[in-house]
Image (cartoon, rainbow, N blue to C red; front, side):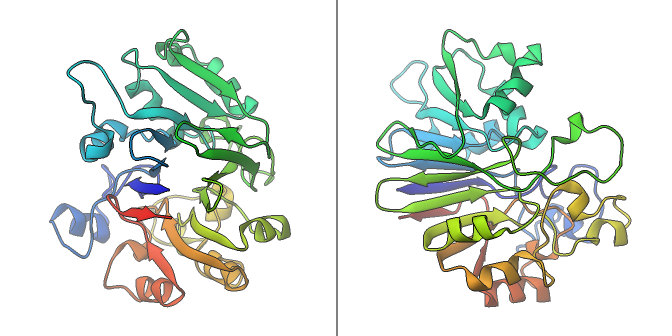
Length: 300
């Protein structure tokens, strides 16, 4: 199985267009310790010819342009991208679908709940239904992908997309069709992609144990990170994301989970782990984590 990291940042990317925070300034200045990142997505393939995107980032056009394996060939309209799998309905997951509208055949896989979000907004009808097959996926049921892979969607603790929230009150974390993880398998290896997760549960721990590779939510380093920095009023929990640090954080949760390779994905521009020279980056790497960067390639 081949894996390409198309984007590794959270919504807004890094540097974020309207942020003048120190990390974003370093990224704009070309500091090699603050590498720019687009919004999170990976591509997977069994044969290197047919690829499935996990989430359609708003930056997908740029990501395709930077990834030769995803370029068209043959002299006419063509794309190696045969499918897109969605793990939720947030803007940084679905907005890139609007870029994939030039009458290109592909299959769009998502839970019925997320297909309902798309169906309710007529702008997504630019994905011509005579060419783009919208496949509703039941949880925990493997679905075949082109080239011999399969994908299984499963519920993880999360919340509704931001644009569907009703007010600023703390939302109840729920595990249903709204926020899901994706298990991709070639029959021998197990790859998990979980860019959004509000909490580690016993069920999720058991599911991940023994995986060959896991891409996991790394939105914030600490729960009150954005509040302390004056960047917003919401904590990580309020936004539906675990934090990397702390007794209930991701680094602590994975100490008891056996995983071949662990990659931090979906990092907010405020997260110090983005910067190569911070204590937080050292702590994450010492715990066995790879800090995701655009353009990384892996094989299982």
